[in-house]
Structures are given as structure tokens and as C-alpha cells.
Image 1 (tube, each protein chain N blue to C red):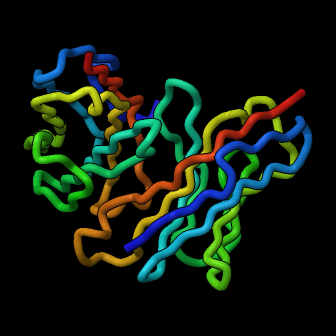
Image 2 (cartoon, one colour; image 1 turned 45 degrees about the vertical axis):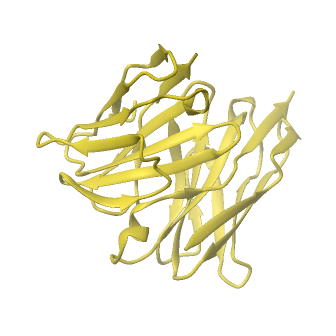
Length: 113
Length: 118
């Protein structure tokens, strides 16, 4: 158990819908990272928050957004969903602003039908 | 900017044989390098990392890797494979230092699936 909790584990939704994925980092970790894993793209970095502030941005679509709350949990919002958004979404956390020891959650598997 | 290339999407070995998974990186500044393992339906688990200091790093489950700057490589090895090593392995890089937004992300290779035969 990495200590990073992601909910839900599985999500099935229709095209055009909006979903929210939730991540609770390990106790004491200030950074949260979001990754998307798909067969064709591999593991892609989406976005990082550090102590409530956006710190780094990767290949995140405009239809996607994230935030980190004062209690340090994070949410990833995916809207206007397309079939191609079906993937495993991972959250990771680390103590500091760099992922020198990042711990990953078990992921949320999103299926868009 | 940084990138990672893992040579071989699938590697198959016999139980007890040497495991060698290859990783080459590209980085504009000194890198931090990592190997992660992913078992089916699981998240990624950190096997080992190189940040500074000794270039030969040891990790969990008997794995080790050597940072070779001249070859821009960080290959993962294990002297004797075990059936429980069957999984997908990812090499990753991030930039050393504390500046800029590029320092906040891990860039992963495409992964290598390791199969261990009895």
C-alpha cells in the first residue's frame, strides 16, 4: 500500500459527460501529480500541484482541469468526454516539489462508451 | 527537456537467468533517474533511483542499476530472475535542480514487459 488513495477505482460513463477523479496523497506529502496511462500514449504527465498551487503542466487537454484543496487532496475534472479519453488515470504524491520519491495510487480506470 | 527510450518492449528470460532491461535517456541538465515496476491492475512502485553520488544504485527485490553519463544509460539488472519478477518495468527521468516547471514532472519510457519462464 503506497498510502495514496484514489477514488473511484472504476468509472464507466458516456461520451459528452463530465467526471471527477479524486486523490488523497500520503500523509505529509505536499505535491500531487496526475498521469494518464493508455496503450497508445503510454504514461503521460498531466499536471502537478504543490501545496495548493499549480506548479507544472504537461499534456493536459483544455477539457481537463485539476485543483488541490487546502487539505491537500486533489481532484481531476474531465469534461466533454470522448472515447479516446478512456485510460487509467494515476495520481502520485511526493513530499517536496520534485518527484524524487513519488508514490503512486492504484489508479482510476475510466471507460467512455 | 528530457526523454527516455527503453529498448525492447518485451523481454523473456528463464527463471534463474540474468535480467537486463535497457534504458537510455536524454536530458538538457543533469538528470534524476528512476525505475518503476507495475504489476497487473496495480499502481507503479519505485524500484530504485539515482539522484547524486554513487552511480551504482541498489533497489528492492535484488535489482540494481548503473548510471553511465557517457552512455546516457541507466540499465536495470538482476542476477537471477524469479517468477515473481514478471511485470512491466518503466524507466523515468526528471531534471535535477529546483528551477522551472519542467522540474516537476517524471517522463516515462514506453515500458518493458518482463516474462519469466520456469
